[in-house]
Amino acid sequence: MNRTTTRIIGWDLGGVHVKAALVEDGRVVEAVQAPCRLWRGVPALDETFAQLPDWVRGEAHHAVTMTGELTDCFADRADGVHQLSAWADATLAGAVRIYAGRAGFVSADAARAHAADIASANWHATAALIGRHASHALLVDIGSTTADLIPIVAGVPSAQGYSDAERLETGELVYTGVVRTPLLAFADHAPWRGRRTRLMAETFASTADIYRLTGDLPEGADQQYSADLKGKSIPETETRLARMVGRDRGEGSAEEWRALAAWFAEAQLRPLHDAAAVLLSRPDLPGNAPLVVCGAGRFLAERLAARLGRRAVPLTEVVAERLRAEEAAWVSTCGPAVAVGLIA
Image (cartoon, rainbow, N blue to C red; front, top):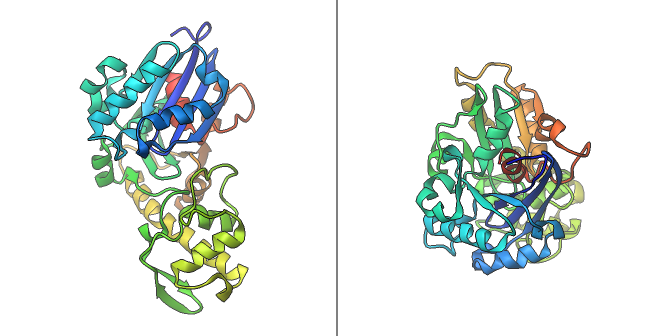
């Protein structure tokens, strides 16, 4: 594609969010994320598409990556890849290419045949982009739901796993994020007034609640319903957190609920630390390799880098010369969409 004469839109079609990035003249002009209820079926994409800015409906070259193929509205991943690719081909104005990771870009018609390469390969796009700017690094992309930890060696993605299943085994996919993860996923107890209390085995609260109380949650990052389908004020958030330890909000002070939230934040960081430490111990990653950080949980990735004694480099800094504005909104959160748009 001739970047001086074409307009490219990068897409990341996820199970709960759709992300898009507009690239003009080789620079990222804008990026956006919107919620998507894909578990209800492919028509949910039309609902989300209608809510996106007008520029997504303009004529462009479209580069598409995805994770939504694992949503339970599909029979299996191959079916999901096929249906999402077909939706993109039928809906987006202009030529559509699907990112197949290690296999490059393919047409929408060829997507089913390349389903194993396409499925959840958005991490590969971000790592490939970083590899063009940094020879050795560890990509740490912490999103609303999952965290990708991808070694980059000699300028190319060097993950030992590729599929979700393989990367869960290698520690390159840690299924934890800063918005949607139930607290029970990474802890079964918590400290409360001098005792180690077991948690209620319920999804009363999510990570968005703890980071709202600690003040870390980026504005606009939480686009999902709360666990109890109620509001997101501090009192409502404290109520959800209190239920995790079998309490009512009135049984604790604001300071105590903040302290409990901070403990859960630490508990979430521990498995990320363990996974990153294993990957950074690889002999092909030098001791000064930085962590390139992005995602809605970039703040947590920066905290991880500090704990590991490594330099944290924001994705926006790595590709600064490709950003039209000094700080483009949503670029970090929409990393894979930005990446496929820039490498298409």
